[in-house]
Image (cartoon, rainbow, N blue to C red; front, side, top):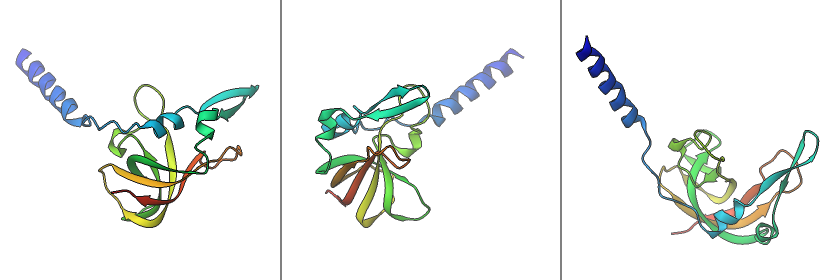
Length: 146
């Protein structure tokens, strides 16, 4: 009986190790760090608003570069619109401890094929501080940087 318990424990342990995602390359850059400065503040009971510090607002409407991973928002093999994150899709940014990493809504000049590898893109960074339900950050007219 002891052997069965030990073998079962070892088998389950091996499955857990196999299921873990490989550690990914840290994609944080100065621009990602500035984007991460956005925070929420309670402006009245049950109402919160995003706060964009001046250092972050200085990037608004500027051409910037961002490395990251593609998060498709539609089905397909090529994408002209997607989310960009510093965390690979297989790492599930909504799981685990800490904050959900910042994501940027990207509108490419020309579609890109999906890849699980990191990419680097350049485009016009726009902050949506209107309070509507759209993304807060956009990278418009983006192009792949080689």
